Length: 327
Image (tube, helix red, strand yellow):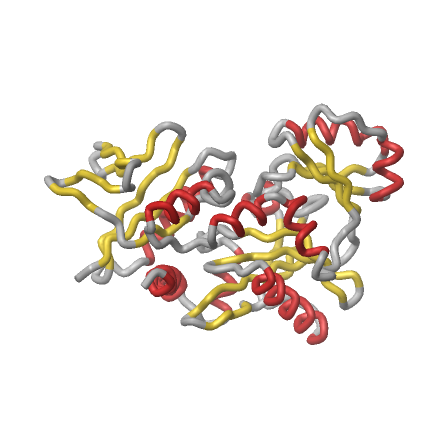
């Protein structure tokens, strides 16, 4: 009997358009002979399934079911393709955990933790994970630019604490630029984090549970044409993403071991993609994405391809691991 699979996509954040693209690629690459697949769009105040003719059928939020084609559809598993809120911050994970519906992303605590850059860095600091010096700030809190620069130095990065795809991120070169950068970050979140600039090779490492084993995918080197790996570089072709990365064997081993350690320390499930910058042979952790981009141009699918894993295998495995976890 075929499983009913819901692919959730969209979301409430600035990443919604990217999520719709990811969800479409997931749909196109899941085997239709194995699953009944429904693309569910999640927008504020409305979760719905839309037919090819444009007719919309709302999701029953009491049990995440769908009344369609004369019957009620209950979903056996949810494929989470929502980047940002509410798919990456723990909200959807908590909802499905309450309903006991298997889903492909990590558990709610891990999602909430990794979405909060400040809290994630705080937890990993206890495990002696190398990372940049940082300074946290809450909207409305008084601050002294001199104190901040004394802590993190120049240049530095001002980042919205809970935002993805480099929204709300500014690279600051002069202390006079700091207040404007802080105001930009506060447009995206009421908390921010200011980090010291790390000058080195930037890499991204995917880790996942593949066929009941923790697998670290080939490392991707990120070379941005812009000042840093911002939204334009990520999605508008202003960067080179080289897989496998042009790094030494020592660097490769170090960053793969660290990515796997972080995955295990945080008790992750499903996909993760962590970003690092090398200082010498030591990788410094930047952040983790628990619902990374899944289009053909996205980093994690390219890493999987380099490892000999097709998109169909990658996405099918995510569902099978989620179903197995809940058996």
